[in-house]
Length: 153
Figure 1 (cartoon, helix red, strand yellow):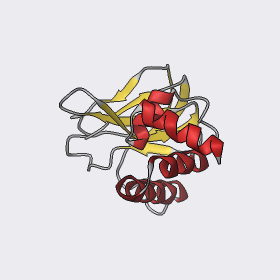
Figure 2 (cartoon, rainbow, N blue to C red; figure 1 turned 120 degrees about the vertical axis):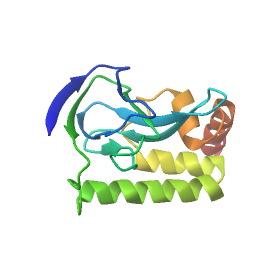
Figure 3 (cartoon, rainbow, N blue to C red; figure 1 turned 90 degrees about the vertical axis):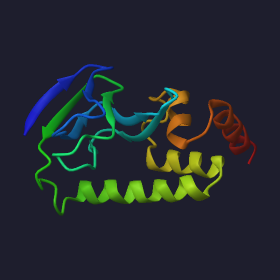
Figure 4 (cartoon, one colour; figure 1 turned 30 degrees about the vertical axis):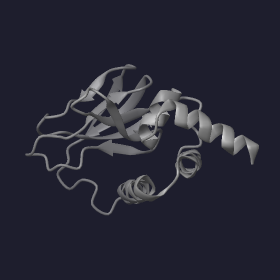
C-alpha cells in the first residue's frame, strides 16, 4: 500500500500494462477509459473521493483501461492480490458497474443522465460535459438535448 499525490492529467495506467494496481481515491477525481480503433475515447468510470478504481483483468494479463487524474488527487495505490475481498468499496463498485451496463443497453439518454446525477451528485460540475457524454455513451449534442428535456419536466 502506497500513498501518492498525482497531478491533473497524470496517467496512472495505460492499456496493455501488466500488474496494474487498484487505486483508492482520498481526494480528487480519477477516471478509467478506453480508446477505440478510430481514436474515440470511451469513459468506463469515474472515481471521486472514497471510491476505488482499477482494471478488472488479473495482474498477470494486460490491462484493458487507461486510468488518469482529472484533478490533482491523493490516492492509495494497492496491489490486486485479493486485497479487496469482501470490501464494501468493491461491492459498491461492482454494483455501480452492473447498473451502468444495464442502463447502457436499455435506457434512454435522459434516463442515463438522471442516473449519472444520482450516482455522482458531487462531480457533475467538476467534469467537462464532453466527458459526461462519453461516459453515457452519447454525443455532447445528445447530452444537451437530454438536459434541455429534463429542465422542461
